Image (tube, rainbow over all chains, first blue to last red; front, side, top):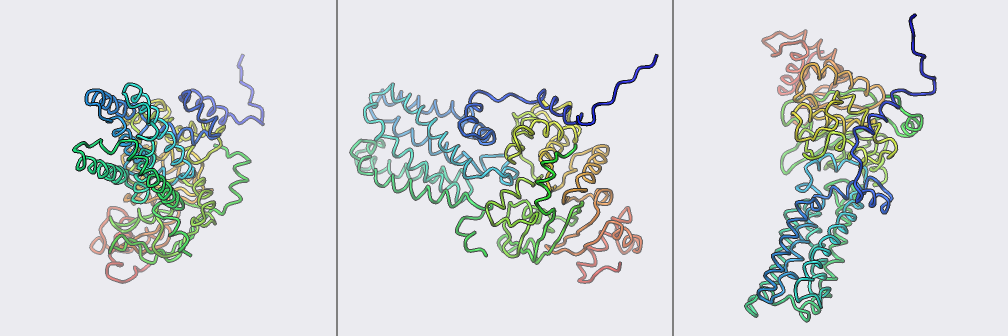
Amino acid sequence: MRTQSAPPPPDIDLDRVWHRVTGDIWATEPGWIERTAARLLRSPALARALVTTPSLVLAWLLASGLVLLLGVFVTNATDQPWVPFLAPVVAIVGVSFVYGSGADPAWEIVRTTALPRRMVLLVRVVAVFVTNTVIALAASVFTPMMGSVVMLWLLPLVGLSMVALAFATWTQSPVFGAASGLAIWLTIALQGLTRANDVTAFVHEDVITGMAPLYAAATLVAGVVVMMGSSGMPGQTRWESMRWS
Amino acid sequence: MVMTSKRRAERLMIEVGVDLERITQTFGRQRALDDVTLHAGNGVFGLLGPNGAGKSTLLRIMATVLRPKRGEVRLLGLNPQQSHELRAIRRELGYLPQQFGYYPNFTVFEFIEYFALLKEMSPKQVRSAVANAIERVGLEDRAKAKMKSLSGGMLRRVGIAQAIVNEPALLLLDEPTVGLDPEQRVMFRRLLREIGERSVVFVSTHLVEDVAAACSDVRILNQGRIVYEGDADDLKRIGAGVSDADAAGDSEIERGYTAVLLASRGGREVDR
């Protein structure tokens, strides 16, 4: 007796069913961080972009932790605020490498996709700030510098990271961005060296308080530059798009 | 893959076409594109030309990677200078650059899925779309393999898969067949013809036989200018009409190609 399978019902697309099944088999389930981010951001695309931030991969986080751990040892040994000095360094480099060519090997394709660059940049920068702040706070707990933590390194961390990001966005080079931010920070540090023969001499409450308006202004200006530089077609700033008819 | 009715409706709201008017692009003193005008509807268009002719630059402009120094660009009936229209274009865009970077620790599926998400595909459709794209390029048995374990030809196929995952209305491929074996190239040409029935496809390649097999229309660029516009059969006729002494090539279309280039360098048009 010959048997023959019945044809599928006409309203069922077998190809689509097959692809859904194979897709589920081949897919890697997102981790809890990505699932949480997708719920908070209400966008699986932004959540995926967040967890693929170049400066949030495990190796990078471990390196940042090691740098600050070193700062803890040196701070405790010398009684000088090395953790507040190193915390902005780690953040400046981390923020410079959140996005763009030089940080992303698939940048040429990524830049042609629909997800707005500005949103990706914002989400990644906030994530890097928060991560670096948490690591630096954790390091500060093991030093005698816990008292003035906000004034000592959070202000320069935010201000100089935004300046580095502005340079990186404007030049489309994370290396140039990081170098610019670090150069400014080291210039400030050299003043302490020349005045008191101590590179961390400027990392004191009265100095940081005096420079707070400068850091705030730098953050605002840098933020404007970043927003202008991350709109429109790549290589084109908001100003260029407004001039172009 | 059968297009969903919703996707078909969305596709009807955009014009399947590319309009470039008098495009000029310079890099420093070098003029990469010089007053190029190009109009294309659905179909597969081959871009041929020697190294440095401007093929990749033209593709990068259409991929919204570069803004031209002069000229007007309209893609799929939309203006890429308007941010909301740019976003709409990019949802319908598929692009494979000549230099193709990837994330070594991603699996094939994860890599294509990442770009499907960045192209703002509906999350419910992403997995099946990625599975379909992987099948269309013949990488089913490597879907869970890490990108770093793939050969050059396989990586290229993954690149093609991420470009087609969103069923783009505008598909731009720069040297897509590099590293593919002859069987894979035949499969790829079939894929192009299928996509070209409802999309605009531009393929930049050095392989003239790929153009002959898959492309309905051909543009030859030389020194930033379009020196030939026509179909592949026309190019073969030109090649059939020239002697070996006048134009090098192992096939009629290759002879046609070299004849056009030689004529353009001599400042004249080839006899058709």
